[in-house]
Amino acid sequence: MKIAIAQIAPVFLDRGRTIAKAAASVRDAAAKHAALACFGETLIPAYPFWLSRTDGARFDAADQKELHARYLDQAVNIERGDLDPLREAARAGNIAVVVGIAERPDNRGQTIYCSRVFINARGEVASVHRKLMPTYEERLAWGIGDGAGLITHRLGEFTLGALNCWENWMPLARAALYAQGEDLHVALWPGCRRLTGDITRFIARESRSYVVSASVLLREQDIPPDFPDRSRCCPTAGEHIYDGGSCIAAPDGSWLVEPVVNREEIIYADIDHALVRRERQNFDPSGHYARPDILRLIVDRRRQATAEFIDG
Image (tube, rainbow, N blue to C red):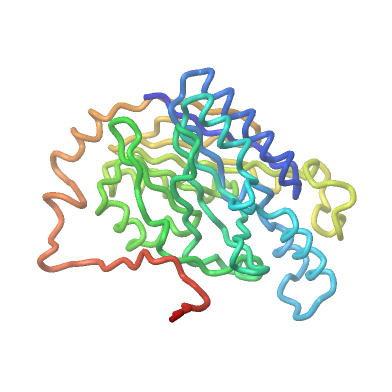
């Protein structure tokens, strides 16, 4: 089966144009007969990189309020149909899509979630997983997610699961996917070889699965001239704020595609389920090497709600 990673830059904080760019990448991947196209964390409309460069934790700061309001305005509302162009590209190309979005749900007011969306080859949004714990300064931009999206999906012979960024370091989050038979793992990243270089191969060896690390690229020239405090956010001309680092590891931990950096590219690879079966011969994390009589994991997959209304 052929798979693709679209390591692209967003049209920064422009939801519509970024979705159109992602849809074009899906069409390109479908034309090359890929069964899956993967994108990085919060590609749409962008990762909030400004938090670490503008002293984002200052309380009640007018500039941070302005930046958040702009981010909120361009966040993705799935219920409204924002992802329809991407869904149509998936349906027309008979290709599944994993994409990272800054999600603004209908029923959650003014809070954004770092979400992973799985769109199946029929163009349906099959699941949305909200990041369980935003990392460090990300908590200033995103709400805390829940377990509702900790599910897997069939894709040909494979069982696919996906996590956002440092969720991939959470042993129990990985275990929740392993327990559902995952053997094709997609890790979504904002884009940095330093993040993807070690963990991609580690998860592959731990899970005896193919692991796809999909990253975003973000460069100084991608930040528009009217972005508030641009000079402080981007002091160095030509800087790669996030250098990519997309890569793919095989179930034995070897590189199928080593980290790709500093360029936009659709990366392709052929994967073979037989290699999963061979590597599971001596270690299967959710099969013969599991000990559910001793070690058990309880996963609450209910979608969190602010209130539960009981009407007579």
